[in-house]
Image (tube, rainbow, N blue to C red):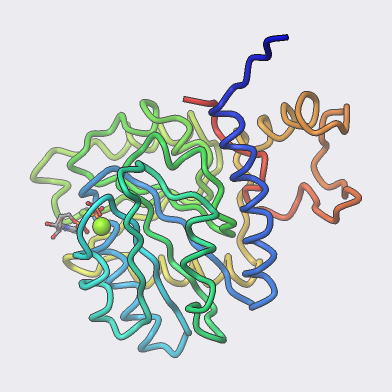
Length: 271
Ligand SMILES: Nc1nc2c(ncn2[C@@H]2O[C@H](COP(=O)(O)OP(=O)(O)OP(=O)(O)O)[C@@H](O)[C@H]2O)c(=O)[nH]1
Ligand SMILES: [Mg+2]
């Protein structure tokens, strides 16, 4: 008998299991993971350099893992902050997976790390579907990329719990249409907080770190509509519960629908 196996769905399902284990591993250590996702060159590393330096100066134990297909350039840049940093080379893969991150953390993640920043591979498509056990997912876009990125990449921006506009020092030079960008964000992810930053001038970096710390303390949560829709879909068709999920109820495995993180099984459509 022949059986059709959807390889992509199988890979995502395995990642969800690994992300569940990773979330619990991090939770046991009191570590909160922040997943940064954007297109190549939009300024993830530059912003992280600033965030890590401020976290270190402010006495918040922070660490970072950065992923690329090639080179250790970003790890070298981030390590200048004084925070512990690891580079993952993905061997051609366009995204990070939970298992890859967990393997890198084991035996390395320093005791007492409060914030673990994870710079994903520069890509607005593949990484969007992979839960990394994070508590906060940030989608970034620089003013030089154009205003339409949120609507062109609705999974990446639709599953974010925070959207960050980068390189605002260049906004006037490139004629960035802020209102159009914000309208696009509202369309794919109503209610998501949006912060504006420049790693060059430092604008908005303190506010961003403060937001991350509030999320880590559970004081700031945003559950994207897209995440709720996918969760309902998963519950009806994928996980055997046989009923759509309602926000606020608790399952036998202890997870609830009001806790604000993008849960295993909550992901964008397969691409
Ligand atoms: N003017 C200006 N340039 C910036 C800013 N942030 C980053 N850049 C520049 O943009 C380029 C790319 O920045 P990176 O931080 O390497 O971008 P990235 O998102 O980490 O790139 P990948 O890791 O390749 O995906 C570099 O030349 C930075 O100096 C900013 O706020 N303002
Ligand atoms: Mg980078």
